[in-house]
Length: 324
Ligand SMILES: Nc1ncnc2c1ncn2[C@@H]1O[C@H](COP(=O)(O)OP(=O)(O)OP(=O)(O)O)[C@@H](O)[C@H]1O
Image (cartoon, rainbow, N blue to C red; front, side, top):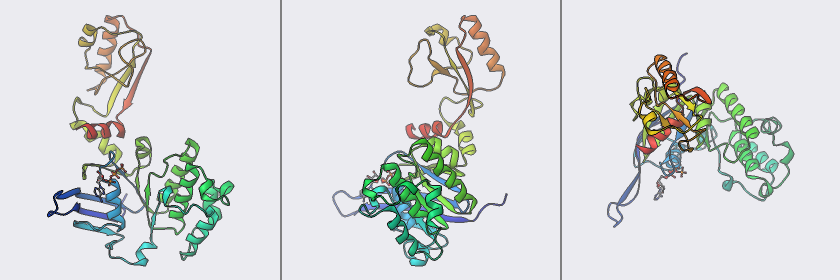
């Protein structure tokens, strides 16, 4: 499939606050961010708290001017561009940014009036399951309802690019699914979608491309498949890092038994060594190792309660990056 054209590029973007002359000096928040997002794709920006995600998005949207580097949003410098570019870009405000005393209907009608060919409000309201609270004042809505109003407002103008900051934060599983489906449709329509989230499972499901930010720099990027594969560089990972096996022990394993395992095993998750503890192999070099593990269970006379194969997830990669 031919690659979609970029809708956003950041090249070596640095952003610093303070002054070299002040006693506190300059604080570099972004230290050379490179990022490309494409039309018709979902680009996910991940990173621990304070990594610089909001600052990156603010530079991308033209709210902040980078100290160094360049930003191109739909081919223009968003910091200098005028109203014509703004009309082609949607930004989802956090719920605090919504006017509290008006109803979603009044707000969305107003937003629609600012655009030449807005998305019909009734259609968007139906897709986001908002009809029951369209006339209630925003102040009275639940967090999840406000979240959907903010999402609708960002999409009403049928933008070519939309920035979604934690679009499913605070949503129940059903509403989250509705938002996932809508994001899928937006992608099909050719919109460029740039989103931040702390929900790694969500990122894994939605992302065409992932950028992981840490301390103001992109430390990993690629498709989910590429990221989970290239995580082979990580610590404690053997020949096939994309696969691991998890087994639930029926009893406590002794120190000698653990040391005698044919493949290195580690406790998986919060449960300590004991009956019902999940153990995992950080990596497997091939199916022969499964046979060796089965022989070891026979030797130590322990029948696992459950055995399963797991693919590496984005969450694994994220944790590796966060602790390195
Ligand atoms: N104007 C500013 N002056 C000083 N420090 C700032 C300023 N803006 C941001 N920072 C700092 O820069 C770092 C990155 O902030 P940013 O809000 O971009 O992170 P984030 O990845 O969005 O975090 P979170 O996930 O918590 O929202 C933080 O340590 C923040 O305190």
